[in-house]
Image (tube, rainbow, N blue to C red):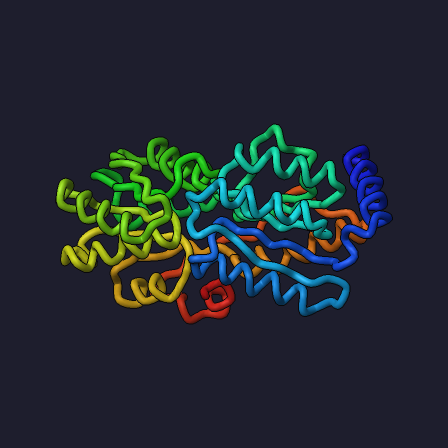
Length: 313
């Protein structure tokens, strides 16, 4: 990492000498702007910017998480205009890697949040901030076994196949169930992070599997669509439904007993710490390679507690 930091420092000095980054812009680029989760990341990032005076911030993302080429273009545009740093939530671990390497070669530090890049990109970004998605998936699996029992069918409603967060979250959920219970997994089904798609898929799954004992919606739009389908099918309270993320719709599902619990990431912290971390790199400070932003299991019993309210949005 010392060689990496020396290279980065040299590149930054060269870039600054050309006057390319005089504006001091931090570009925050997320998977999509059409999600309360990512808007909460935006709020956290803005809080970090408001806490200092050296840098400004831009916030952008594609119309959907599946619009990977659009996110690549947003990063390319940020590099071309010579931003001081980038905070990036990559929608695809492979597709964004070459662009992040180009940022590094241009002397622009990059902090990755939420989803990991491909292994080959290591050394071209300076820190990774995320929920430990594997540990989070296992926590959801433990809750499923505790509430649904040791046997029966559990449906997995996922979002975008191959995304770093999905691999850890859904993969470790499924692996834990297989190793520690006799629960049978139905799916996974991929909503492409579209609520309406998740609603239709869940409706079909519930109809085809009337004996389900549990169901897991693995991100915000997927869990919202899943919850609405459960309500429409009259299945609320008849199976253990667990969601991921914590917008107002999901909170209401917990209060109404549609969802047994939601695993909520520190999305505000992701944005705030992401911007703070990239500023530290710009200032030449040491930062950790991985910063865990955590997850809180929120249910009807603790939803109004300070721990839950600090992560809900």
